[in-house]
Image (tube, rainbow, N blue to C red; front, top):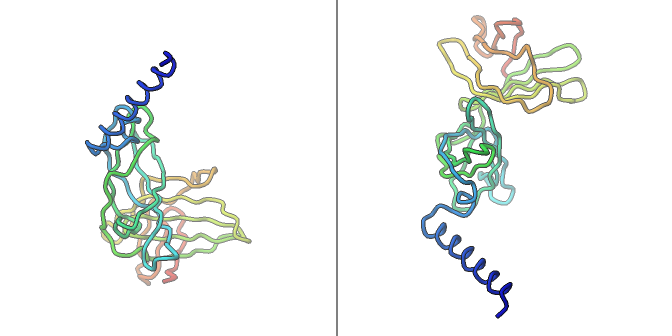
Length: 206
């Protein structure tokens, strides 16, 4: 047997041993190749419906934060995975050296739907859409014709009659420097929200 063939044979045995070890311990090859890892919590911020199986999602979009930096990723769901909704928590394993590399360790089922509440407000040559879903807000500002100007998501907290926004993740290149931070329920109509900084009124759509 030639020396080159021996080296290839040894390499094959070593790689096979790594696969067997990671499979036996439950670490998984992906985690093994990440190097040193750590665990962190994340949030589901979007679900993509499964057209073949009604009421189940086939893919989720989630976000997590490491050292004040936000990372967004996707996961394709299997038939054995629980139904997922916006706002659900999940556990992740990520690479300490490259935090953008991650894998989902565990899903949860905190919520049973992603309907939420939807509000609209008009602006010059466009409109603003605001959705509040299970602790996640989605704020989209569009021009006439539907061109998206600003699009970002984050978390919100309800404090008495106020809604506070935090942890913004921008989905467009242009960050909105005048992004909303605090809304209050209109005293005259609880189907309306008022942006505290701009006094703009958002009316409940559903």
